[in-house]
Every structure is written in C-alpha cells, then in structure tokens.
Amino acid sequence: MKTRCAVRAQNTRLIKCKIKLTTRTGETYFYYGLFRSTADAVIDAVNRFETAAIQATAA
Image (cartoon, rainbow, N blue to C red; front, side):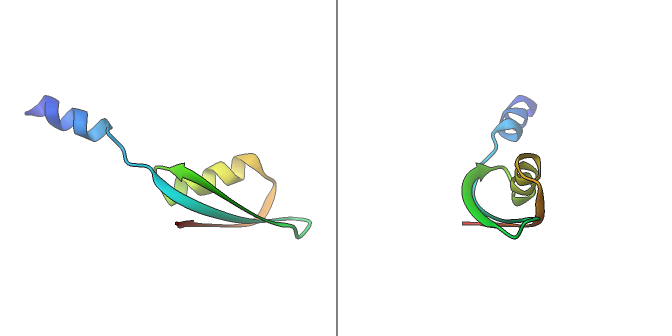
C-alpha cells in the first residue's frame, strides 16, 4: 500500500491558468499556461518578465 500512495503523490494534475501582467512601462499582457498551481503561474511570470503587477487565475 505504501508504494501505491507514493506513486499517487507523484502524479500531479496541471490546471490551466490565465496570467495577466502589467509591466513597469504600463503595458498589459495576457497568456495561458498549464501549471501545478496559481502560485507556480505567478513564479513563471516573475521569472519571464520585469513586472509591476501580476494576477493569475484558474481558467
């Protein structure tokens, strides 16, 4: 039984997220992606862009 639980724990679901970000120059961008959580979506946006504001929602 322990092996089954370990296998299930590694099986993660991806959710479709919509990321809205505003750059420091005031430009607004939207993009979609598959992430493990909305927090992962925000981290992805921070790593990709120099942003002033980020919003991530499950789409």
